[in-house]
Image (cartoon, rainbow, N blue to C red; front, side):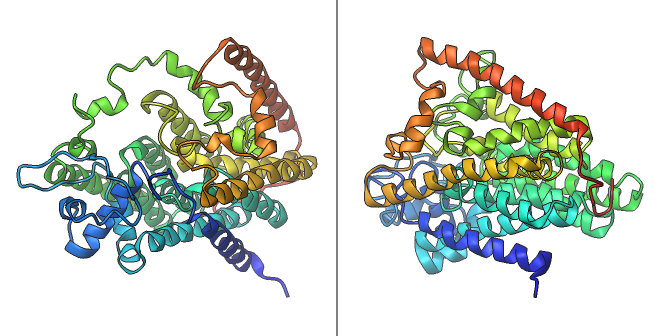
Length: 461
């Protein structure tokens, strides 16, 4: 008896949910179970559950954060004239976490996030098989390996909107790749509307999805009009809400650290030319690069080139989403290195890259399946080792994760450039990896001439 696509998707999602629960006790820092923005989200969720508002002043003053942040909590919020304090973060994640936070505290909130990670994995598997015709064994292998590797596995239980945003992007891809109609319109509208409410930084990606959705529905004028009207109304409501609650066009207006105005979220005096190094650094930085912790992500590079040449289904969306996400992370984010787990800026767009990677392995490079799994195991081990070390006090997820005893990471990281503390060797390695990426792109482009057959795509388009 076979499970079928839906049954297999449920099994994959349930497995990822259960395994990523292991990350719950991992400590963020030595003085706090959660750190940076995490306590702000948790306190806001608690305020919604207890008071029905976003004001965390009384939660701060009562020390409600002591369960998950043992030391004094830094202030992120401006004191408002009425005495309230509103965290400068999107309200949608705290709204989702409010009930779990009320009944289970910070542990309940993290369980709820792990549930989103499970749903994300199950949906990725389903979209790959049902929408893009990827063979189930390939889709399952890629999904499980990457969902149990950094950064997805770690953000499955860290209190940030990253996993929720990645899920919304996947929902949008699922809707876009289906037949035009009410379901497509509803799925696109819901996901695009949700992204800005999770975080301002997702607005450019939401815009790409909105434009793609409107184009998808161009032959269905009523549905296209419905989508555009829904997005316009939601946009107006979003701006009005921000003005009323945060006192500005974005939640940043309520923060005490953007003293030069909301645009200082981009940096006090950004040097965009020097930020161009992040285009590569987001991949291969020694500590904060995707490939540092899961080298199998490098296989997504030839997959991108293959898709660009071969004309993979919905390639404009699947290529456009990560492109825009990468540009935002490279040029608009204040820093690539920060008080967070690596990969935070690009987690939301990884589903598109993962789907391209699945199609490339399945269609153009089937012999790469075994190398992917062998390389991918190192990322799964990196997650498991980090969880054990951060739970037992050997390292923490924010302060000193690069001191992990994992010999695979320690050896591999030596050939990666260190952009955090750059030396002459950094720029030598930067040049080497630039050539390496060019070679990967060429290799992927050449595989564009091979194909195992016709891709099955629901709804075409």
